[in-house]
Image (cartoon, rainbow over all chains, first blue to last red; front, side):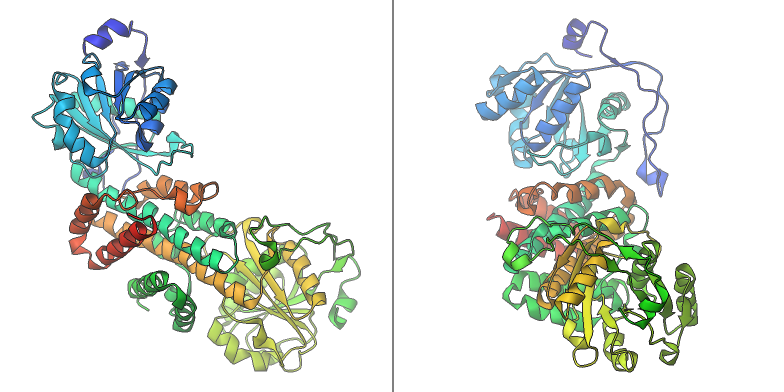
Length: 301
Length: 301
């Protein structure tokens, strides 16, 4: 712990977490869950939040509720820095020069491009603190040579500003520059969710691809369906029970087993009829054709 | 009611449903919900189930639990006819010649092709009963000239044989050849779910397209993500919290508002990196490119 924590924490803010969650795994040797039992007490850090976007404004308040003290929030704009800082009882700063160097943990949640640009200035004079970022596809080694202790905490979730997230259901993937830092990071992560896993930068990138496919692309299909329904005078909300059931089924069936619909039945007549109906929607029509062909190919139709 | 119901129902099996569910709608004039209050008692039909596939084996047992008596189950194979008939305390038949002509309601849940082929033989001598099918994309007029009273009950849900369905959360779309039949059908449908809506054949087909997009295609994206994760030594189950949240968000946000991810942020660097990673998966790579472009186009990136 840095000077800040020694001075400020008064020995009270400790995390005594008996065990981290054991994920049930297909191949523990490659997946590497956090299974060891830990008895020692791990102090909570004094932290600084760099960024006030979607991830930052969900992650920092949740950590704050769990007892982590945020000293400052940095954002380029006064408005977003202040909005998040108020929630955290922290100071809002908009200049890197105003950033404290007395914090144990710096959490960087900014766009991947901003991360690249800001890091040298952010880290200068703050090399002794623990630095983490929260991005799915940025390697941990971005910190190498710039900080002494560093890591990643990737919350695999879709964060919308106006929508509360139940963090206890979020999968968190951690990685760190040393065993000691990994140990700290896992314990702090376990304040947020019982689902804490280790994943190196390569695995995290593979997870990010899967997250784009299962969340961002899925939501875009909802968007295209919404447009289509509106054109036909039908409300999107009628789809919600079906959407919920589609999500629920893959908790107990593999997606392969859960597949239903005209394409997996090889019902080419319905597929062609739907393609004909979609003639006024060339974008959705093209995706309909490709996805139906992909289903038929996967299921040997 | 036909002779069968007069003889067999003993005046006991009545549905006294105060009101059908009122859907909250964008445009009631085109969407036409079932909103009228009904005070008269509507007798339950004596029914025959034609088909023993996924929809039949979810729908018939649920109606049976709600008091509708099934006299027979027809399927081409003895095994599936018997399995469903046992659940319904009904007779299993595998020849159309063995089908009773003494039933109020014939429910046809077979593949769209089988429906076309079987209908003339099924209906001959049974023209006075009410005939319904359960398909999304088959027009009600398939019964015209063959039956006197007919309709459609389309349960918009994904039915897997090994997965129980909570019918009270299923949206049901009904259509019938006359007001009287529509009235009966709505009441019997309301035994299954409070979400009963009227939809003509054209609207039902548009709903079916939307169901394919939001359920079948979404589940196929899960399948492709599962394959990708397996290749990378990662378990699909790690995606479940994200999948659940993606479904949950569109209950309160429009899909447009709920969109997140690299494409909607215009983060082309991450998109290109992911495409590079997917080089060994040309099918998923192609879909990744198209869906990312479609997101960027939709959101003006």
